[in-house]
Amino acid sequence: MKIGKTGESIVLELLGSQRAAVMVAADVVGELRVPDLVVEVRFGASRQQLVDIAARVTEAESLVVGVVELQAVYRLLRSLPDCFGSEEAFHIRTGYFTEDFLTLAKGLMNGISQLPD
Image 1 (cartoon, rainbow, N blue to C red):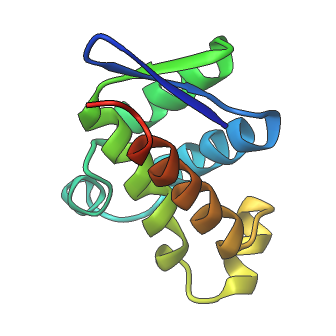
Image 2 (cartoon, one colour; image 1 turned 45 degrees about the vertical axis):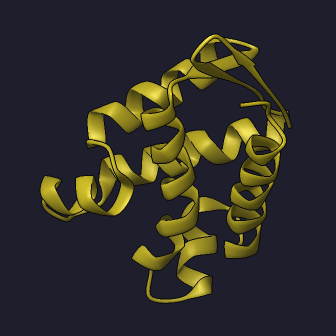
């Protein structure tokens, strides 16, 4: 993953597997059977906002986001595994392990921490 900054926006250049993880995560959130308010509190964005971000991931080489959207992506990666009762259930539904999502979230934070103010 490469992370850059243009003005006030953050540019994420995700690898194929990283893009797929974000898309799967947003897809799963769209199907969660919890109230919309729970989604917004847990992930920092509405279901539709997360689906829209995922759609932008599929459409372009780079994902340009603001801080609020970036925070939502981070929270999505960090929190989605907690929505499942077990690692097995998470893996069956997403095709990923919890560690994959947490590593991606950590990489995101590492990249952000290296950006100039």
